[in-house]
Image (cartoon, rainbow, N blue to C red; front, side):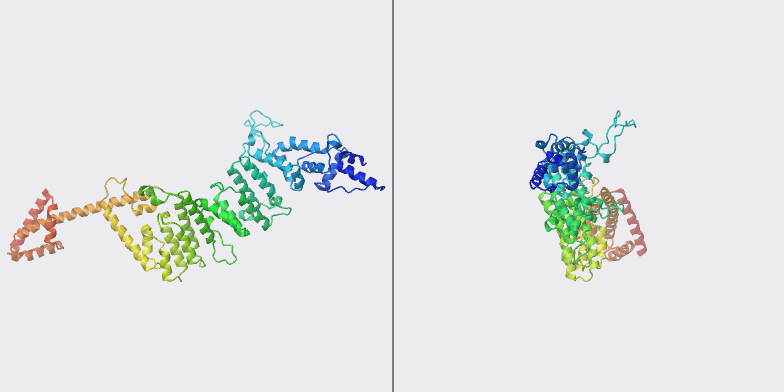
Length: 589
């Protein structure tokens, strides 16, 4: 009964020979540790005794390594186990996506033996090549994408039908399958895919899918019906520990592409929150903050509101991290040559609803300041440093900054007057809208100096607006928008400003006409009064001034004398004044 074993395996032949030389009646051998354990050795023994062996993708790697370990080569029998398993690997397993994936998963248990035979590398190469190719071209069976479908509504028993076509799969069809691999094998697969020229956005999407599957912090809104059974491939236990999640997150950070826009900003913020919870190493945190800073204009206010996970709980939100993210963004904006509003003409500045990314970021930071301002533990230097980090040119209006500072002053009533003035110096009173100016002028929390500045610039704006009404022409296409229109930065705000200017212009024209008429009448009456005697001039002029209710100096009338046009209504008014003077003369006599 020993012959089938020793005839197929060189190792078994030597062990049996050594045991027989010892002269024992019972030949007892201790075979070496077989890759795959007792179950694999049982399959090998059946093969040696002629039992038909069914090779599958789940056992072929174990049998291939065991055959190599037991020296079951062609030297000890034609069609031996090494040859059969190698042929099955090359001609069946490596040509199929599902079989290659199953075979690769079994390599984890016997990784040193599989590496020695290059089985792991060949499976990875097979998967990487197939992931870079459209499966619709070869009709690879991707079961999760549905069966063969026919436009005619019929499919034959063997899947062949006229006009039948496989359902089109998306480019991310392989995400779910490769996520079942262990982290070391998954890392190697991503590296090989990148070397094969797979698109970087697809690799980034696969990394995000893998991270969401195993990092609990990224699945805070996980459904109740979802379980953690998918976490088992990472470890032999039920779910990864915090240490394993920490290692996974740091590895994902190293694998993610650095190019801007390939990874969603919301996903990066989720990684950063999880890294803060797991207390990842400082280099990982710095890399994530730098990645977010590169595309901060794509973030939302909800993304920035990261809780503070420190033991001291100094502040409610992690303001320091947002400060560093903003600094990375500003540094990147300078490197990429981001245009500032100062270098753009006024017409372009006003007409653009969303000027530059830095304008978007400035609005985002102002909103963040307003959210963190109610925190009583937030110190003034930290709040002030974040508010001052945004360049002045990035804010077309300071309404958002004023609102945040007002909330901070309301939540910190114990601040000294000097601290209030220092904080309020960040506000440019000339860049406040009319509504903000009205609120600031009545705000008791603001220092008196700031209120005076607001009132001064408000009066200056009003005076400039009135002066501009005299210079407004009928063609307003090229005229500069007033601040009220600039506040809206939209076509609606500009149209409102134009209508207000037109109303003011009409009102000023009517007032000018009335003044001219009064000047004409005053001039005519002055000529008539000069004909009266010196003794009666003062009394007569006093009665006339009382009648009209104002005092008019003779110098003022003479100054306006040249501006009076010679019209018929002027002569008519002259006759009326003459008649009134005759009647007055009779009454006085």
